Image 1 (cartoon, rainbow, N blue to C red):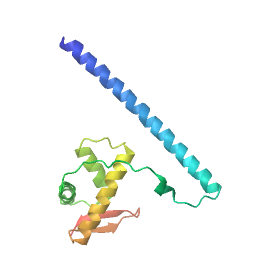
Image 2: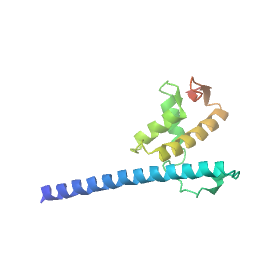
Image 3: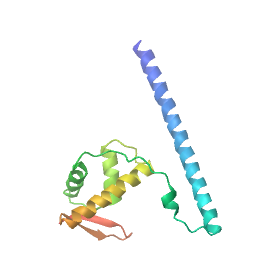
Image 4: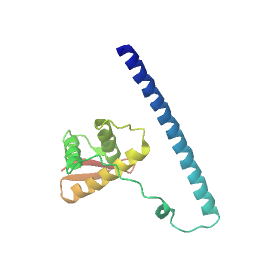
Length: 140
């Protein structure tokens, strides 16, 4: 009984992973199509703001109140200067999220950048541009 159940669950898991990969491929294809349409609109002289035309996406709720700030400060206490992207990837790993999901990592990176800016205004952290032009964050 248990072997049959395990085999069934493993098959269901494999099917879901296959579906997930197909959805990612489809998303990438649609994204490329949108970029192609944007280039054609640009070539035809369209001057409107395409960013405003995007449908509003639901915000992922990952953090409880003050949880993000506490995580960021805890990571910076380890002594290493980190970019917002590095911090976002660490958050995603700790939360068990897939860091190859670019939309999610970008969303978390934006939230980290905003939180770090607020922490900088409060004097808790300082940012310095690294060789790639990204801010490397440290505690004061």
